[in-house]
Image 1: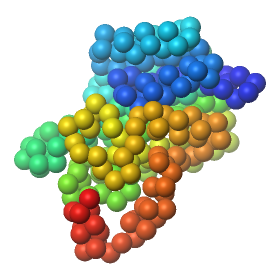
Image 2: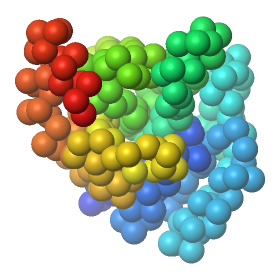
Image 3: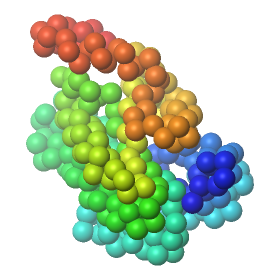
Image 4: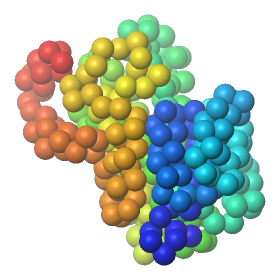
Length: 255
């Protein structure tokens, strides 16, 4: 349960290796969060983040093995976390693969695997979380979406399509939770400088994991259902979303 000042006391991160998730947990630690569970494919790889969080004052930091590509195991892993921590304020779905569009176009099986991770894995994990949030009658499920799903570009249309699908799923799930005490928050960052994008040139309005994390914390405090990061992307995409397709192709190619 959040404290009397509305600060998050506990968070479960599905995709504990995410740079944005790590930055979010560090900011939460500074705001009195005391329990962090990092769930990911390689618990050892998450240990440096766990150590930083302990140093930042988080009293309980655990790493749990979680494989986004093994949906048959999701309910068991998540049930186990909630049985050990009966009350969790925030669950963050932060895993995902960017991929290279040229390589994905040449390898349909690889494209299908990326879709399975980014969309199917997130759907499975989220639906395994929902009964627990309903039972405790509070908690926020945070989805890391992307502006790439707002208007899918030709140069990353497989990745963009997964974010479009995830965004739609998250919005519908949020509506289904109305009145339960639980809620959903969708985060739509633009280009973020992280280890996943280190090989790429900055996109327009590029930001950092720390800046996105600050926007996430602000969204949690205000009870937002959607967070754009940076915020100025919202009016930009209100226009881009409705551009005629021939014009959109020119704009997207020029970025």
